[in-house]
Amino acid sequence: MTQNLAYVISIKFAPGSMKEFILIGEKLRSKGINIKYLLSEEYGLLNNKPDNALLITKSQNLRDILLETARLLISDNIDKLFHGQHVAFVLFYNNHILNLFIARNLKKQFKNVRTLHYYHDPYKPDKRSYGIFKGLYISFVEFIVRLTLKYIDHVILGSEFSYELFKSHYKQYRGQIHIAPLLIPDQGYDKNHHREFFSIAGAYNNATGHDDFINLVNYAAEKQLNYKFALISSSNISELLKKLSNAGQKIIRIINNKLINDFEINEVIRNSYAVFRLDKEVTQSGVIPVSYMNATPIIARDIPGLTQHVRHGHEGYIVPCDCTAPDLINAMSQVIDNYPHLSMNARHSYDTIWSEHNFDRYYNWLLSMLKY
Image 1: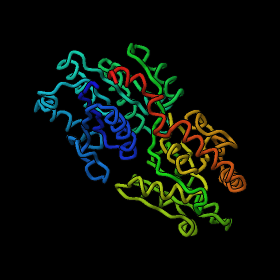
Image 2 (image 1 turned 180 degrees about the vertical axis):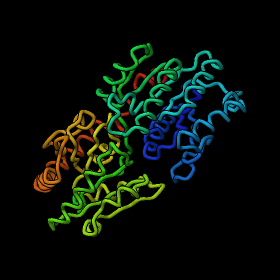
Image 3 (image 1 turned 180 degrees about the horizontal axis):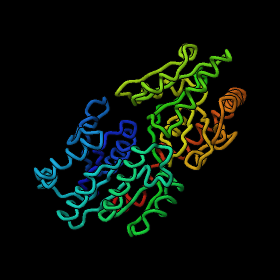
């Protein structure tokens, strides 16, 4: 079996994706590939950080990212990262401006190195729902992606919809493109587990629909409806919580810490009848496979990035883009009435698409490339 020195690189801190890139790395290790990790220092705060990881970045906002990038480039630390090694291939996971310089440097140092990049959100055609500043940041990231692609041999995308967006915006790309859905480690589930919440999980910004969720909580409290809610996020939600009524505060459980681990997220989701995805714009959602792994249905807004994985009346319910609180209450009622059917289908969808046992099916081309 051929030994290959390979790197999995995620120097942008995205704690929710850590389980995804570690799964890929460790699957490759089990195939005989010598895997190392190059990560943000912030991952070191999490319990499941791999032992063989080099931590090099820690900035999260754009200003600090640019300053840190300049410092690393001026000090020549990027050039020294792989000195004395023979790197066969590198997988970049999550966007970062340093990916551009690392990929370029690798191509200079190693003649036969193969570079791969997994893109969750390759391109967002409509940035209006994110607000001016977030929209400008996304445009900057897409500009860096365009530059980085010059040094990327293989692009990996999570869905057909993501593939369509990539092809429409990066028409100059001449490398190979692969579709591989997010793979989520199976934590098991209990089909008889007690459910009590309707929840929302994940990052908060102007496009994620958290405001509609809070309006729903307030509406349910005002109408004295017999529902409980949960919100879990590591984002700053202080302004959002100001919109929560006194009555609404009594029927919602809130978990909001700077660092939230997978156990906490899974606990909320497996205690829920359904998880809301009310995004106004999104390419795909990592919350959906985690929910399905826990046999938890999804209530989703009617946009392509969500309906590609949520079939109305099958794994969840689809609500209109301009949905109201009564629309969401109706979907919740439908979930409760049809929960066994929806839950079974959600878990089946996980097993079929996102379970780790699908690795060889999605990455056979990579294993062949590494001469496994």
